[in-house]
Image (cartoon, rainbow, N blue to C red; front, side, top):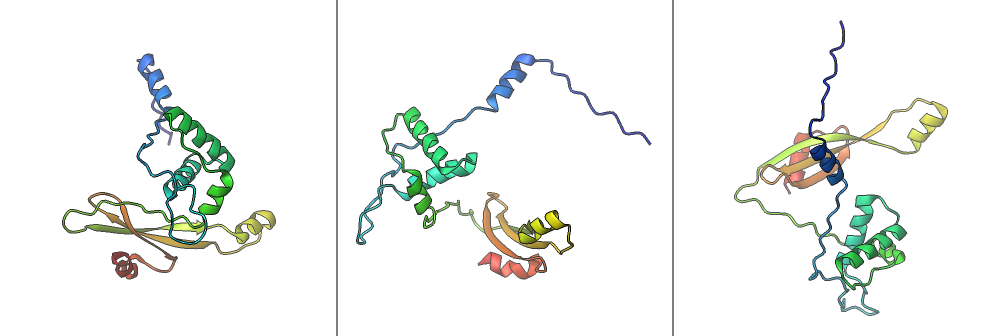
Length: 181
């Protein structure tokens, strides 16, 4: 039995094709000038934070999106502030590093209109650890460790509304009460 020939696509409009390729590298960042960038007094003893949680979260978001080390993130954020025409100070990398440990991130969600239709499913995730390295290095046999991630997704908005991580033996049905709370 022979393998079917791969379909060949021919570009007929090079101008549009070239514009589409260039658009893949486009980057747009919107900074809200009303965002609370400076820290507020906490009411506790000691100096108030110089930067708000939103400023630290913004820097960490840039770090996560582009996979940059903290020092490069600070330079990137400084250049974004300059391009946006904002004269806001940027936290140094040690401040971002220290504050990320205690940062409280509030992720807003849109409540469902009416009843909630929750879709529940799970997927397996292989856990890497010391055993994986030993297997690659020495070729020894061992049993891989898997975890199961149970997700509850709102059918209307497709937002993740609940998440639980268990070992591989737990199915979706026993986790349903946990996901509903």
